[in-house]
Image (cartoon, rainbow, N blue to C red; front, side, top):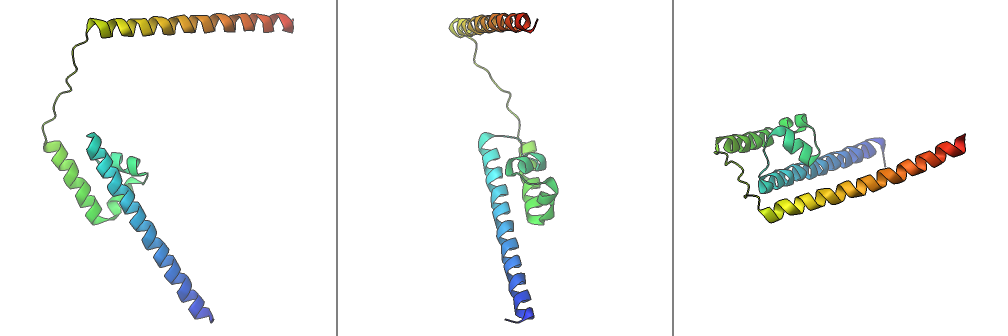
Length: 127
């Protein structure tokens, strides 16, 4: 195989690899957009880049991707946002929260006492 054939083969391999990476990354971006839409998250370049694990400039690099994200963002901002409605807190739910917090306080106080005891033991042995 001559030098030029080897060079051409390398170029073909690199081009194919680059194209495959581009397709994989674009697929990751599209899946990220779908996930964000499914959970009702805010759609913008920053959130999509973070979700797809790509840079924001990467998203701006491809005009069709840039236009698609801008369109989604504009659609989302033109939708009226519904306020988050929380169900009223029942007495039972309130008492459950209080019980959990009391239990947590008890556990933390117990842990603190144990650590204090160990700390005093270490201090006595170091003297």
